[in-house]
Image (cartoon, rainbow, N blue to C red):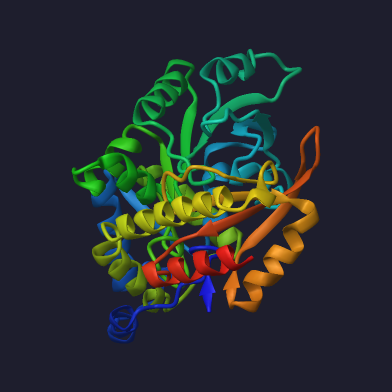
Length: 354
């Protein structure tokens, strides 16, 4: 099977499994698991923060960040399509009593700076107090430009607001924007001066579970309390942290392979559409910047297309949307360390047969 559904479906490599097996363990609720502590210190040093906190998921590290930054009744500015707003079950409102202020995303994945500034509330008892600006990088596989990241942070600082990055795939953004440079150094620049960062270990980095929250020592101390409240305090979790250490040491630079495979996929899908006159106006391929590609196809033939892929043991995710003219289905393809060039070529052969 070639599983393009997500970069969360990866299996630990033999080297990662061995690292997990050999990890020295302690009790992380008492802060004495040596492997957890090593992972947290390592990540903080890599990305230029004072401290870090290991938690089970990116949804939880985002929620911990929101609850550590905002009091009940305060407001966080988010993107309409941000994961923190749309895909985390309303946790900031339900569990944190934090009001989200969603803003429309631009085609390039950003939120317009003018929209952010206009949404900041004046200090008036009628309004929820604006406390936090949240950014997501990458967003739908799109890389938010480094200059934009700096502008958002400067805007937050100018208005006395805190800033958080949902950086679930931050290293994908770093690899894509570093060119021939060091992606770790680029990642550090992308989150420079931000108050906090959530970094997922179980997406492109290939760990089986876990996410990190990074920030100041004071902020992480508050976050540790929130983590306990949310049920994220684990015991001998170093067996999981060992996978995260292995991922940071071995799987950052190799993400360039995933990006190259996504480009190969996009190019092949484009050629397949061009070669089939029956698909004229009924299918569209979107450019890929990192490891996520989108392919839109007429809803009338979409289910047959997906069933055809499934019959070839090719798995994807999809969802319907409507234009003024017709209903379409958007298919998401995600490349990762368990998808190689052969998988991409086999998928393109199946597409061509359809």
